[in-house]
Every structure is written in C-alpha cells, then in structure tokens.
Length: 169
Image (cartoon, rainbow, N blue to C red; front, side, top):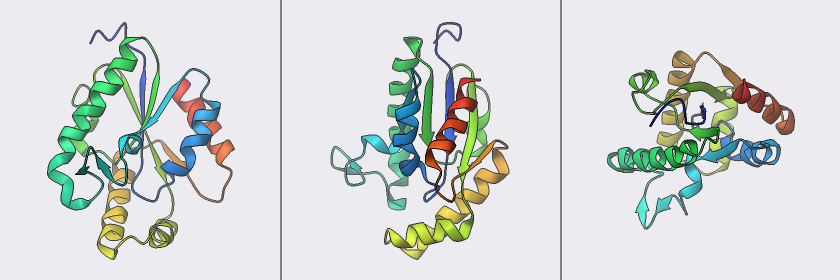
C-alpha cells in the first residue's frame, strides 16, 4: 500500500481486563470520522466461524486472525480513512516500522493497575492461568509502549476524548 494514500493507523493495545470493550462505545460515539474497531468485534462467543480464537489454546490460529485484521484495516485505510484499532499487546518485533502494519503507525497502551485487572477478570470468571497471562501481557505492554492511557475509576467519555485527541494528532 502506498503510504501517501493511506489513512493513518493508531493502535491502542491492551491486555485482557484493561477496559477495551468498555471504552469502545465511548470512542465510537465521539469518533467523528475516525474509524474505531476492536479486534474482538469479529468474534462471536470467542470464536470466528466456529473456530475458537479467544483462548490461550488457540494461539496457533492467532497469526491467521491477525492477517485477517490486517486486510480489514488495509481496506479501510486505502480509502483514506484514519483508523483506531484496539488490539492485544504486541510482541517487541511487531513494533518495528513495517513489521506488521503498512504505512505510518502509532502505538498507545490502555492500562489499569494489576489489582484492578485481576478483579475485572475474576468477575468475568476467568481461570487463574488466564489472569496470570493477562498480568504478564500488561507488564510486557508497559515495557514496550511509552504512551499510556489509564482506564480506572469511570470517566469513560473523558478517557475516550483523550485517546481520540492522541489518535488525531
């Protein structure tokens, strides 16, 4: 894709329990032309066309799911639309320019304190192994992504406004 003709891409990464799903409707409501998507939106009960995606055991399928999202984002961006995509925590090699996403890309982290993350995931009935993985993912995100938005204490509209301001500039 020609970088000059594609819309900008901002990636808001977050470990499970960070608040991506809660924040999504607030972002969409205030997006004003920015295309806002969450990588979980294609899933139905944790799967895509009958294939489990949202479980640690499905890790071998994740690269194909990531490629699918790459195509979806590419189609929107080639029309010149800016995109804000909420996604899982990347590996360090995914942050390099051109490693995973075409054109200019900006990363930010949606985060919360680990005790809050654990509380949220327990309320969802997540097994301890998933909770431990989510805490480890959050630590990885903090180590890799310097731009951080904290999702604690309500104020979802204000948080959405701050994230959208970052995405537009």
